[in-house]
Length: 562
Image (cartoon, rainbow, N blue to C red; front, side, top):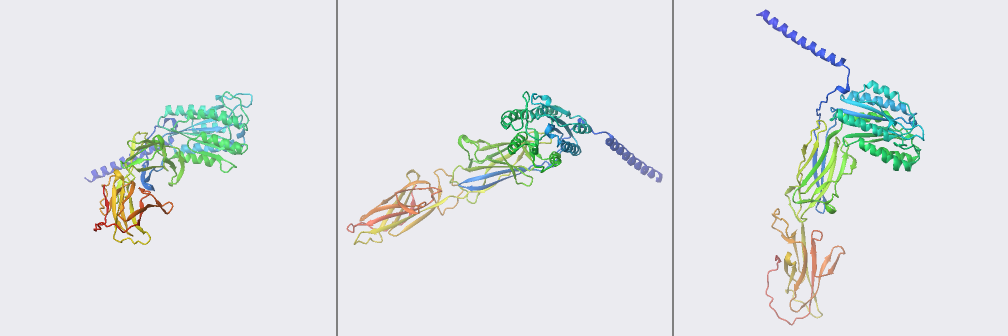
């Protein structure tokens, strides 16, 4: 029995040792095999791709509310295949800076190769004709290192370049399109990037002779538009393009501004401008490499939708256009990076508004829009109600490329104060000379709103009555209000009338104007949420004491007839 146990123990140790040897063999073999970018199979694996979201609402006055929808997430190490096209300007003006460009590009290639396993890089160089008599052509740009070349070959090709000729950026974008098309064919699921570097303004296009860099009108009106068309053909919505400009080689402030305009047209991510040697190329390429290695995209083809509840409507302009939306890109710390020109599509009947956000970065995006009460006199008191039926974002996962992913937002609730107001009526009696009005004479005053209602009050001289109430429109839903201490009154215009007793004359009816601070003689008033506290004076003159009539006391009430 003892020997048998020993054999089992030895066999177990032998099995562990064999497994250890096999694992090391596989590890050594894997390390010994040279890395080939072309053979790597994509591993579509998400890391920390949770999308956070938040919806808030706040009152901005006048029964309007601002809705804010925010989405954001975490950067993650890129695990999706990456194809990058690097474009280098080798025109004559680059002769003093080409060494710095080569060094920065080589370091970038090293960083990407180290940081993104499934990466491929293609290198395009461009220049232009060496004579002002020679026309530009697509051959002014060449692919010097294709996607499937080795890292060392790329570096060797970059190091072998020299600076000469003009600047035909149009030809460069022709070659970029070829490379992007090849990338889409080889690896449909890859993330694609373009890094476009130039040290100045384009001076020539295909089929035309070059011009001097100082010919700004021709460059602005002819060369840049032609180049832009080629850029747009090459860079679709799923390609991220960066532009880098060495502006120290551009003459004059006007030339530098035009160069910035051009560089801002050939990018959809970020433009880098080097002026007065304020930053070196290595830092720029390092920054872009970090952006690629730490993929900040949390959603692609994102569509954000909000549907408001029946109590509200989206504020629109003419023809139902979106006039209140504000869309912002956010930095990683939540601060605003830039405002984006995106407007919502609104369906007034369903209360739905949608925005095509496209690509959303880890910093996130913030969308604001405004709604208002359909009935401005609707209220909830202490009861809280949601502002939306639903809010969601449908998007494509940038890692798995799975379409139709969906996140739901929270439903914030608000309470809406009831609208209140008051009417104060004051009775004033003046005496004719030699007469004194009795103190117990009663005056009947009516506030007639025709089809919206009627109020009646009986007052004696020097009396005043105030009625506080809730405001409503004819069809306002008042079911949320359980307070029975106040009446409701319909908003609108009322006529003020008085049954003048015998021995008296009506001297005048006056309504207080809050704008002027004065009582104005008028027999009507309009009450609404903006003019909600009405003050009325009814003046009579005691002119005779010869008539007798019944002065039986009646209860003095302010009564709503309708």
